[in-house]
Image (tube, rainbow, N blue to C red; front, side, top):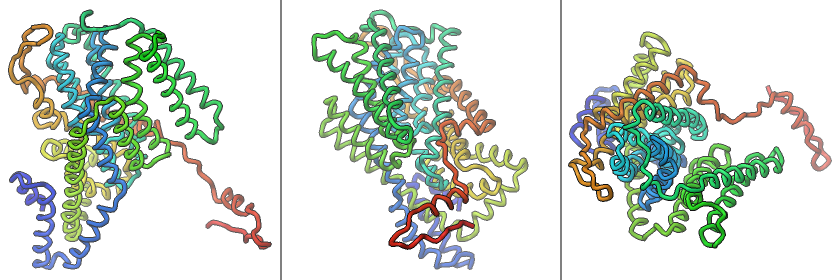
Length: 533
């Protein structure tokens, strides 16, 4: 079955139909050889209906719509330009801006292709214009764009949670600390590089920095907003923690934006122009991230509800910034429908494939094979990591998630592996594979928008060299090493993924007994004592 599937993939036939065709073909072969019961095929309609009625998967079109709309309306470009101006005076400032904006795009879109391509189109010409090393520029763009694989609300995490049978909220909270750690490691690398090799990470020249006066007012506004948020949370009752967080965050956002708007539309100079631009460009996406990710993490919304709020929020944001046109909206909706249909058809094909595979006891064969590996749990993790890393070169995440992950669950559970931790390891592994030469998808995304020929820069008049594939490959190597280091850290210290885990109150049987037995009587009849065995 696997060999036939590989032949179908290499022939260029669509993966969804290859999966379904192989499943049906070998189902018929199994029936003829008396290895497969024909009544198994009667379960196909139920499997298809179960897939289409899965509410968790409804989050996919919502988050896809968010990402595509942010990219289409140029909001990502505004972010890069503004943050680039803010960090411009520092050596490596543009690289820091790319990392920061890459993290923001990852936390609002969850789509790797959109992040890498948009940042490649916007920041690569600017980094080349002001003397950044080609390897440094391409490496940081690819690494930052690929953050969308692991930073919530990643589509990867949604599908992985669905396939592993764990909640999306659990997966999001588990991925948050490794994602933030990865961002910090990227920034630390750029900081070290700016000291060791300052020529490859220059500061922006004074002529390109724009208005740099008044960063003090930005710090002051942020400190006042933070103090206001803390004060509101202190005033709210302790039992209303989630409500307090939402209320305090909303007040902080309104306070900051109000100051910037008053500064823009009146003669009162409350803050500098730089502060005004940073607030109006940066705060709305941050508010959007909290609206989506924050409500999911604190348990106020499901991923589907959070995605719906995010889609509406992005639409409102695009309207307020006057960047939304009918054509952009039409293209976004069409591309969202195409990608969502693509994912669901792959899932349906995988259901048909796995039905036959399980019907001929293929899962038992896989389980015994993996459990028989030398080294126990360590050997299993090393083998699976290597397998997924290699498959990531030739298969998209969706194929790996829908075909391979279900086969790994039973062996992982038999070895006592926590599935959430296992999912995070797979996510980091896939992200590394996504940017690894020679077949990493992110490499091709950037190559598609990188200059293929030398050209003359319109602003500086300097000759800009073309970027070769070999340059892109070399530039990404340090970031692959950082990913591998993170993979080792998460594998060695599993408690990293529990940093943002919510505390769950455990009630013993006696406490539950006391609570229930203290209930009042109804209609003159006392409730009988209750006990739990």
